[in-house]
Length: 291
Image (cartoon, rainbow, N blue to C red):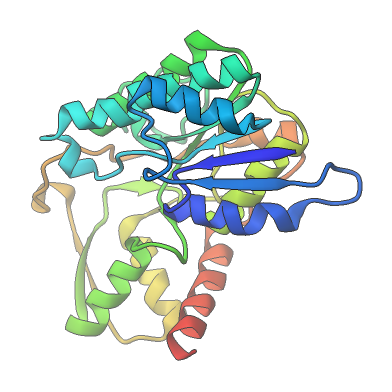
């Protein structure tokens, strides 16, 4: 089985390139992973995308490419939609032409955050930021083009390959010994290693459709930060603040937690609690820092 990872230099893309080949077993075809970044293919350019994917003829395309700077999207609107919407349309069209299944990584930010509880796949999206709107448009492009797709909405990603909330909070805490973190944004921290395994399950079971996939459980960003320092043992004061006190360009959902029951039922796999995943990642960070 030939799997093309687009956006292979990103946080999730790098994990997939590393982990997918190790997850194959005797009951499943051998996996060949092809890593592609912007230097290989510009997904905002339709003919370029079609030619590139046509030359590779993958069985599966996992699209991790995205314009993910939520605040920058507010001013770089055309770039946001070019990558997150038009780019996905181009990938979906090329996938349909070559017969490849497209697995696309989307976001919790397609919701407005007003629901009292986790969002399920049947809840109506209502994004409140340019980033969320562009990602939702990308979802709709895929759904209109083909039925051979999987859309994975995930949230609050962190992993070893890129700067993320965990590394940012750790660095700030160790520099200043005090950090201010919002208490009124709730979601599902998700470890890229665990999401990579879930993507493998989706591939191996030949699932199709829309799925929410995150580590189990929800927390506020404030609770997440406190847990980080609890696990590291760093003596850092975590000060609670409200979103309104934290000035940023984009409006973000206050509750973007996701209900993953559909994925669990379809795959037979439940992601571990976010606290357990975070503990493993913290141990990895400590190992990398000392080696």
